[in-house]
Length: 552
Length: 54
Image 1 (cartoon, rainbow over the protein chains, first blue to last red):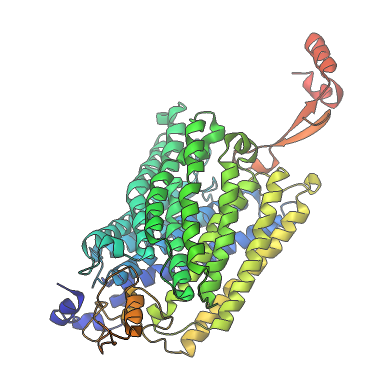
Image 2: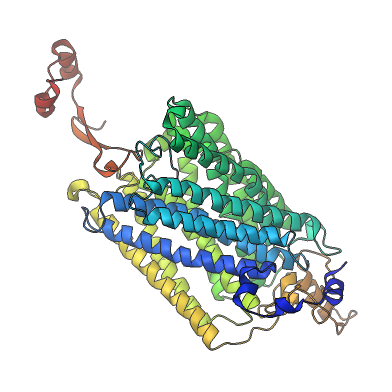
């Protein structure tokens, strides 16, 4: 049954049209679930960002003038665990939960109740993690939770146990949402929408959820090992479980980095194609590269353990460096799309364009760290912090905002202010590079990670101060973004169905879309390629094929 | 090692609460001084005072 037929046959039940709190909290509409997840994850993103600013304030000067070592390590653990498990992964999956059914012309997500359960598992995980953070002996052993530091001998108190429960619940919720998104992509595509006609964003989401359902269960097993270890430390007295935990953890811990990356590559790709006004360049190559990238990134986890002396370094070095090939193909797609296009420099486009060089810095420093001989020197230094903050913040967060500025009008029906958006972009770009470039040089001069403070004679002071000033600029830019959302909501400028002249199916329906996404007024158009709305506009320009009134 | 002297090393794995103060010192000496140390077990320079007791 097509979407429009379904919407006509099954009109919205009366309860769904009311907008009370219960209708939101118990929503089975994928759009509402995704928006709740966005809101929750964004509040937590600001909270964890505030933790980072506090840590940067401590590190602006030598010594321990704001946080004690214990509080610093708690802040750091909550910042790392929270950003990964409570903010960026939920953002990545919420994007898919919102957009995948729309881009596929589907009326709903598969298994909407399981998707909602995923959201509530994630919320309970967030509650446990924050509870564990507020406990007097909060978790303070980093987002890795390595044993034996995470056992009851070295981490007594409830904080670490609550951390274990929180990570487990949040990851379990993400597995559910990954599975329902995968099901939607495989089974609920509109008629005519073959796999090779799916938009690049949906492909990026497909490889993401493939990794979620295969890699995240390893984390569930790993934190269960930590929980068992906390119940009885004697169980794991030998070294075996210590290393087995590291393997299990990184079998999740590396793919999750790509889970926090591919959906934002999809955002960048859609933004570039839309604002270059052209069909995405190298579609088939990009799809193949995404699949190869996902497969490859499942086989590189050992590079986190180069320095452990227990790992097959040659193999993991080879697989890690091989990832440059699909990454290069993706970059060809980005650049081929914008070269020769008539670019429109909207805020979304600026974020997408900035993603390209900034993520390249993160990727290229990753090639350095993928050489075991170099990694022995760089391992656990600020250089590694610089590397992954460039991939995750200068990369993924910029892709995230490219997507936010692109799809905010679709989800809310109102436009974001462009001038405030550009101010946000400028401040965030300056702040990001001021914060994270010094990390590389601090790493070269020997500053290790997890330093709650440093002595005045260590030579880290100047670069650390520059980095802390940058972090302040990032903080200001987030206020500009929040102000932009407030102004745009308070004084709304209606968006209309397709404010950007975009390419994919979600722009063929109203903003915000109706309960079942498409209806008689906004039917699913005919899909001939991965850019169906571009096809319609091109047909309309042909002299022999005049535009039909229904645009169908 | 670039030159003889004392070099600071810093703990690279999160080892616990006082990780940030977990430093160690490396004393770089000439080959002649090192073989003299192997013969006599007498530590040269500043760390001799604390190290010799061990």
